[in-house]
Figure 1 (cartoon, rainbow, N blue to C red):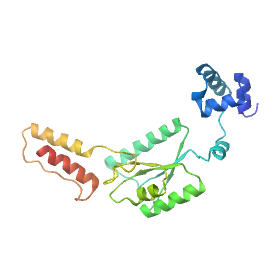
Figure 2: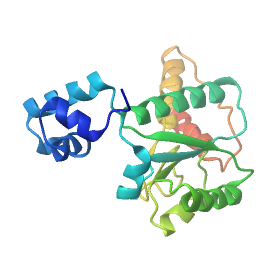
Figure 3: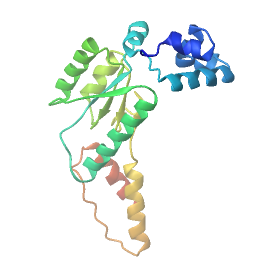
Figure 4: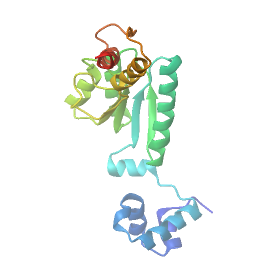
Length: 210
């Protein structure tokens, strides 16, 4: 038996080829009963859509780019490792793939964006290690390219989607705990002033003391 096709799935489910295509690409337009019958046929035959053909038709690659920083250690390394695993697993559930690449600095990373868009037709990017005056986010915004950052866009929180921990809230909770234990001389040790994460956590410490 050869590789299953859209036509063989349609025959097995007793529907038209277009109905099978709708189940795969626009399931909301197909009745639940028909959708279940087509999905059962897809599973039984082991049908997999031709991604190359779909890319030509939709001009979308379903590939998301992520520049990985040098290997980290301690908490930062563990967090990024878990994030990368979760991101990849979630992308696969939506029939997308993550393409990893490296770059020496922000400028090199934007050059890599341009190369990947031209060569692979990449659909969007996920950025890590955000910082003040981030060249990468400006480059992507100017070209109206889709992206999201795993890290706060310091000073530009309203410009694009992002996800981050609330460092100020966490440090304040830790400070509150020490205050409740009766301590009054509580020091903060962190990054030098001017670093986004350090300033955020220092603000939480100051609020807890106040």
